[in-house]
Amino acid sequence: MTERTIKVTVPATTANLGSGFDAVGMALNLMSEVYFTPDSSIRLADSPILEHGERAETLPQGMNNYLLSAMDLIAVRSGRKLTGGTFEVNNRIPVARGLGSSSAAIASGLLIGNELAGRPFNRTQLMEMACEMEGHPDNAAPAFMGGFCLSLMDEKGLIVKKIPVAAHWKAIVAIPEFELTTAKARSVLPDSYTRADAVHNLGAVSFLIAAFATDEPELLPMAFDDRIHVPYRLPLIPGAADVVELARKAGAYGSTISGSGSTMIAFSDEASAEAVRQAMAEGFAMHHIDSETLILEADDEGARLD
Ligand code: HSE
Image (cartoon, rainbow, N blue to C red; front, side, top):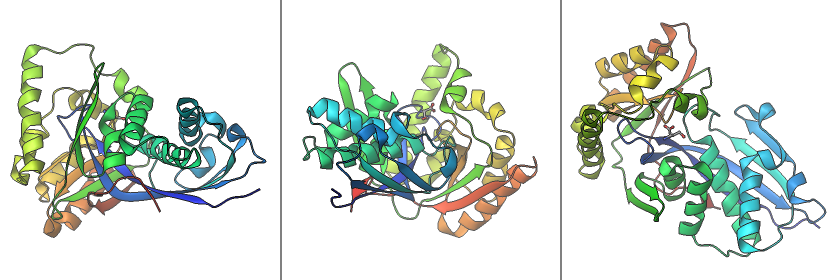
C-alpha cells in the first residue's frame, strides 16, 4: 500500500569559514529536494533511491546511503519499525566538495524517519543525532537551523547558537571538477598545534563571530587567517591560492576553503559578486581546472518538511 509522499527541502552548508574549524558553519541557499513515498511492501533497507543531478549514478544504495542509515537511527532510537518506500532526490549539492552533502542527506533521512515514526523527536534532538552521525557539528547544525551557527559538541552534549546573516552578504562558491573527501582532507592535519597557533586562532575566530554578529564584513580578513587547517589543505586544491588572491583583488571581503574542500568560497557585497565569481573561475582556469561558480546567499531556515 502506498501512502502520502513526504518532501524535505535541505540546504548546502559551508563549514569552518576559515578559523572556525569543526565549530562554525553556515547554510547556503543551494537546495536539494528529497521525496519519500512509503510502501509497506518494501523493507527499509531495500528502499530504492532514484537520484537526479549531482553524481546521481554513483551514489550508494541501501544502508550505505545516509538517507537510509539516518532513517534506521530513528527506528532504533524510537523503537518503531519503519516501513520502506521509494526515494526520489533532486540533488543540487555536489558530493565530496565541502558543501555539506552528507549532512543534507542525514538531515533529510532524520526528518523523513521522524515523520514516519509519528514525530517522537523534536528538532533539537534530530540535530543532535545528525551531529552524532557526522562526528562534528559544523555542517549538521546549520543544515537544521539555517543561518550562521556556532556549535560546541563534547562529552557534555551539544550547544548551538544561530546568528541570522544580513542579506547584503553574498557567498560566492567555485566548485572545481575534482572531489576531495573529508577523510583525505583530515589526514593531512597535524595531531597537535603550538600554543602560538592555538592562541592565534582564538583571536581569528573572535573576529569571525564578530564579522557576522555585528555585521562588519571588514573583519573577514582576520577571521579567515587560519592556522589549524587551511595552510595544510591548500596544497590539496590546485589553484586554491590563486582563487583566494584573485577573489580579494576583485573586491571580496575574504576567500577560503569551504569545509574541507575542494570548493572555495568568498564573501562580498552585491556590487562585487559577479566580478568575484569570474575571478574565482579564472583562478582555477589558470591551473586548467574547470569549475562551476555560483553566487549564493545564506539560507535562514534550514531543512524543512514541505
Ligand atoms: N570541519 C570539517 C573539516 C568539515 O573541515 O574537516 C568537513 O565535513
